[in-house]
Length: 108
Image 1 (tube, helix red, strand yellow):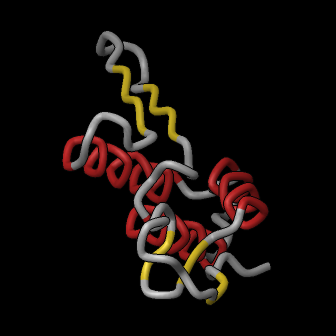
Image 2 (tube, rainbow, N blue to C red):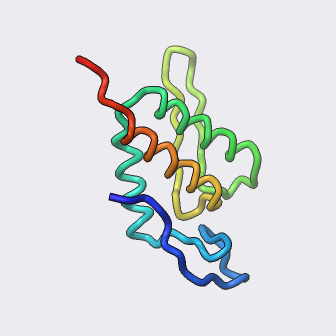
């Protein structure tokens, strides 16, 4: 199952999740989200969080990311809307999924 975006012509005025003829449709974004929820390796889950935090800090407040910092004894909660994320962020997340799926399973 591929996470690669479909090559489609794009309009300049509708650039959300589109870049130079590359875009993700709703079905592809849903598949990507499902695959992000199933990451098997901790280091890739950490990388996912780092990418989302970086984009949350670097762009406007309506970028589709919400980070909630809880007390130290609790994990950080990050919610995100793939449809609102900038395409470079979505592409980085797709790379995380691909890397996770290509890593050998850890011995139990």
